Image 1: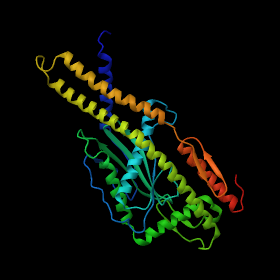
Image 2: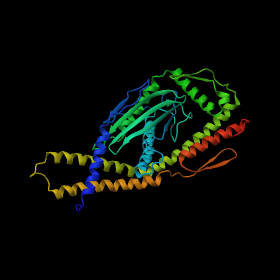
Image 3: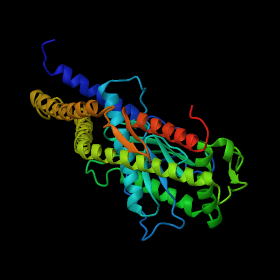
Image 4: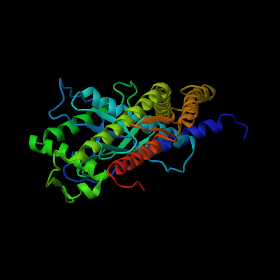
Length: 368
């Protein structure tokens, strides 16, 4: 094989075919009432509904880190990029909800729990630099489904709006679901979330207060206001809030360091894909005597490929460096200091187990 351009051209064509195949594949999503629709596509920016003050009562929301949609054992550069992207995109969604000023505290968490009344869980189905497809599930702390939806977005060449086309619309529809509830249902949700959190810590003391069914739930009784367990649970809850705020700062720091390279990678991928599609259209219409010389075409094709690969390699190297990286987190209780190691996901799991053990000891029980 003497042609030095063959490998770059083949790689680019394979990449193009993969992109086209993914972009045109049918999308199926399970639907459960209430819902918006199974699939929606945004290629224009929907204005974000911004409030002067949050809707009363203020609703706290947890945005779970996106599921990257890659096997945990996959340690390839592509998987590292996807895991990095799952954190960056979750941060963008959280920022959109905060910017709307419609909610209480919006936290970015490794995994959803009953800590907040409502959680947003998202899985990346496809992300290739131009097309983004997400499966989104909204649930409350009692496990009731608000809605689930598959959303798709195609980045336009001019780059206007970015992912606002998806995240503004999701924020607005979450707001519509909250506004559709009357005041009684809103307060019941906040009460139910508090009981669900207490139930997770001490099921023997708080089970049976929420009656659950497949489609709904309701609070059947409340704990006594002077129950000393509630004060302990509130202190444990504040410790978990503190940990979430601590690791949230680490996510923000990571986004500041990696975000610019990630955006360059998406821009380079988009430019390459758009250029290749234009080239294919020109090649199909070109006659034997018209168009650029073969050498000129190969030069332009290789230049586009090289630009893309440079940005891709830079992001791969960053993603591999950040994949699994987490600074140790030091947390303090009244009489103890804990140093948590490992990934932020594992730190969060460890801290929640420690908090449960602390609660059991303070309540006169024994930690496992």
